[in-house]
Length: 138
Image (cartoon, rainbow, N blue to C red):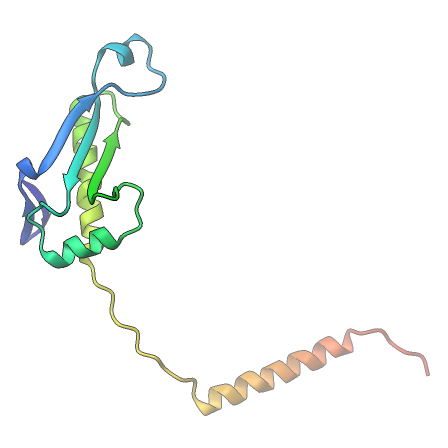
């Protein structure tokens, strides 16, 4: 079970994990050991609540395919276990990012006194800059 929050978790069978060979430098070890992890998580078929699914699908994240599948590749570490944990942590963080709902913005207006202060400051600043101009000889 992948624990997302206190009351939300994902079953292990919903997450498909495949070990693959890592890319990049690493000598002979990288050519013979499948230590990188390829994680796939189908959002639509998951047991997540509907609002989580909608928010995940609405994200413009390159890890989410057009089919609604989260694809994460972890190859940072040399061991399969660490890469597996890193991939699961990234999936967990992605789901947690859509869990937080933003507070609705309440439009406000500046007070009359703050508007007056702003305009006074603008005129004072303009006068200061005007004094920096070229001095004319009379």
